[in-house]
Length: 197
Length: 74
Image (cartoon, rainbow over all chains, first blue to last red; front, side, top):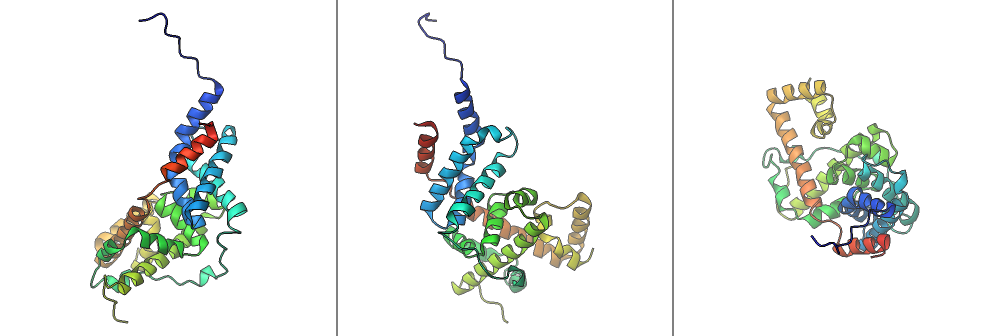
């Protein structure tokens, strides 16, 4: 061992902050990006929204209780930033009456011919994302947090600041609506025969 | 539990959001009721399909570089 090797400097507070941020926050970059893309509807705004979220999170990193739910904390920052700064110029909250949407399962249409839903396999990624993008915003964000990012009802309720019961009913309607859109698309493309009315 | 009650809990069941007791009641019903069993299987396949289709892509590498530069001045 050479006596000329200088000892490694002890990590300073900045290094530690950076290390813990990389370990607990930056690992969620893909999730943040997927959610941002579905909220804003375009890649350039999604990039900016995610970057801004990470900057805000890094500045507020001392307020985050280490080892708790970093993903939920980051998604809350992202959604607030979206509402405050992006929604106005990208998408507009819908004025449709969401409760008026009467969802019924596609299963009734396919249970005789394709009860296992094999027609879904013919539908490519882009088409699914397009269908999600066409959902009303409140449904879209709920579906993305649940079905894409795998958050619990409780976590989603906290991020969206709504009761758990609201998450449940939005998720129910959103999934049914999405199913219907994808089924109609599959029928249109000839992947599955329309069920007789 | 009858078919209607069972279907009301469909997504909570698939999302594992029910209490163990209700979950058990649903399992018992599904074993005895093939139509409900098929319906639940269909919905589960749909949710798996959604996740597989939507999770394929993550953040572009350039965005990650941009953020690292911005945060740590790299």
